[in-house]
Image 1 (cartoon, rainbow, N blue to C red):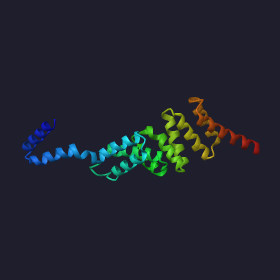
Image 2: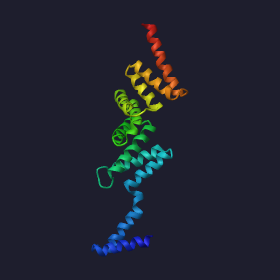
Image 3: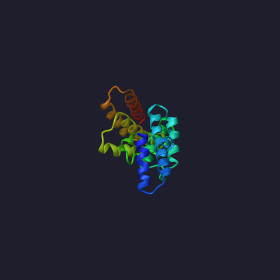
Image 4: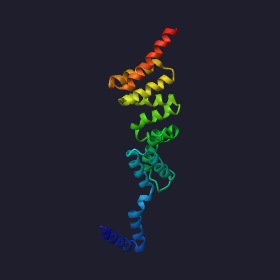
Amino acid sequence: MKILAAAVLSLAAISYSLPADACVSAMWRERVAPANSPVAQVDQAATKLAGGHPQEALKLAQKALALRGTKKLPVTSELKARRIAGLAALALGQNALAEENLAVAVKTSPELTPQLAKAQLAAGHAEEAKAQLETRATSTKLDVDSWLTLGEARFKLGDVQGANAAASEALKLAPQNANAVQFQAKVSNLTMTRTLTH
């Protein structure tokens, strides 16, 4: 296979009046250098994240993102790197970094909206998290975690009734979900406390 590739490149060199060494060098870069290329770093970051190594994934994704806007990092790879960096940062509790990267990635991958909302909520941006999930709920069914994140955002904004409604939606989807049951109890306790004090 390598011999065939070298032969094709040598033929290309003759056809386009390029020195054969230049074509062989191009072939060498294509075969050997990709492991160090930004695109390969993004792929390695994805593997690290999938393997449960968010710190390593974040490093690789950020290294690739340092080259954004250059021809070395295609837009598709940049968006993939943003996605990986955002999810890795979220897993590491680096919420502002997660929010920054996921806000870009969600434009082409709307399925990341729940993760963006979690990052926003954790970074203290409850209004943004609420808006993201309420918008998403109009076009897509939310999962249990998304309903709980929406409920938490509403709760932090003082909308106890809205938080209760979100908790109820989560419980409809998964009646035995411990997080949903706990959140419902938290909201119910606050509602009862407010009723008793007024």
